[in-house]
Each structure stands twice: as C-alpha cells, then as structure tokens.
Length: 112
Image (cartoon, rainbow, N blue to C red; front, side):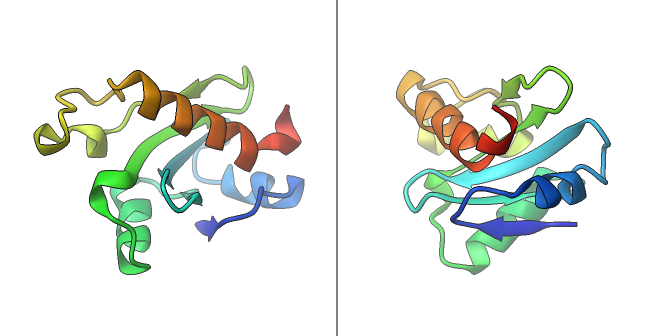
C-alpha cells in the first residue's frame, strides 16, 4: 500500500505501509513542500507520485525506516543526481540529510 501525505502516519497506516517488506518502509520526501510518499516496492514509484503532484525533482530524496531498530537511512538510487551535486545513493549534503531525517521523524513520530 502506498500512501502520500503531509501529515504524520498513524499506527494503522504504518502497519499497512510495512506490508511490502514487513520490517522496512521505503520513502520519498519532498523536503521543500514537506510531503512524504511511502510504502512502494521501489523508490521511483513514490518519486513518480510526487512528481505528478507537482514536486520539483531537486527537492525529492529517498530513504526509509527499519521498523525493528527505528534506524532511518537515506539510501536510494533516486538520490544519485549529479546536477544536484549528489554523486551517491546516500544524501551527501549535511543540511539536506538533516531535513530528510527530521521529516522522517515527523512523518513516523508514532514510532518514536
């Protein structure tokens, strides 16, 4: 189940989002508009939803959350964007990474 929203996910939504991988949820966040799309099998599926809704490519960053350890990662193939000075699948800019991680904690605050 894929869900895209601006508000934090409820416990019920988080349970449904975890159906794809059981203990991990893939996410893509528009860090400018503060919108999260989560629950897809591949990050590009969440990315496509946000692009259709008007998000700017340069503001979209992918990662996920491990539901057992509550570790947040910022690892996604969609993050490899030389035009945005990101040459890795990890978010390299510390400021962008912090925004992504803070938004992950907001969207998944039911877990923390």
